[in-house]
Length: 282
Ligand SMILES: NC(=O)C1=CN([C@@H]2O[C@H](COP(=O)(O)OP(=O)(O)OC[C@H]3O[C@@H](n4cnc5c(N)ncnc54)[C@H](OP(=O)(O)O)[C@@H]3O)[C@@H](O)[C@H]2O)C=CC1
Ligand SMILES: O=C1CO[C@H](CO)[C@@H](O)[C@@H]1O
Image 1 (cartoon, helix red, strand yellow):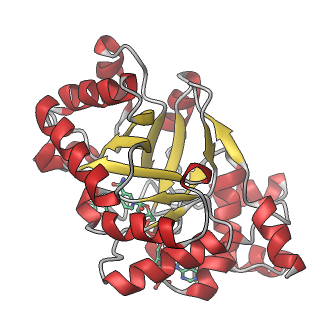
Image 2 (tube, rainbow, N blue to C red; image 1 turned 90 degrees about the vertical axis):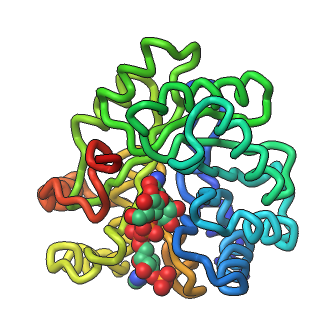
């Protein structure tokens, strides 16, 4: 019990976004949680274990379960940070406003903490973000952001946006370190969230990571999550397995040395598990 309380306190570390909103550095990703009961149980387990953030999207088809899990968790809505995203087929100004309303209705919330353009649709991402800015101005979302945006997409947004995106959620893990995009985001005060932080499980048998994990008495997943946190990234590992949900959160009681951070950095191969945003719509 004592250990659980300690873990809960430790995982409540936040990153201050450019507008001053505190975003939890650690949360639960819920992609592929489409089986309703499994999704609901995983989300409740996470919140009860101290997770303060959930990352969903309209296309994940589990926004209802997110809302239900929040209400069933015994944690106040305002203690949690919920992100969702507008899917590609709903992009455009009016379409995004409508999609947001649907999302809010599914969640049965009266606001979202963060809303993102899921992918930069070449003809529509600027208008999509304009709608997200309107939602921000109307205080329906606490922070405005994007996902899968390269530097050139962000530069295009900067030319028209009144408010720079506060977050860019991109694929990022030791095989895809995204160094230059991370630097560009830092220069522009855009927080970076790592999606597929465990490379969808593909990195868990890596020998370098296994060796480092052994040294700290941690698992490979915990070492990777710690690597994200020490790089000032927001990290949202997904798991439906109760033990793993707890394991992934148990990363606040050790620190990787600079040498181990550099060893993990050296695993970079610029290798994606998902699609390059520039190829998503071609
Ligand atoms: N913006 C975007 O375009 C995208 C956003 N995302 C977001 O990022 C989140 C995370 O990315 P995701 O693609 O889900 O992949 P992750 O890198 O988080 O890996 C998830 C996989 O790793 C397994 N796993 C998790 N923890 C452990 C552990 N401790 N030990 C062993 N295996 C483990 C899970 O299995 P199991 O569940 O069976 O336990 C699952 O198979 C998504 O859920 C979503 O919220 C993801 C993709 C694109
Ligand atoms: O969030 C997501 C989950 O993964 C999907 C398949 O790769 C992506 O298209 C989507 O962006």
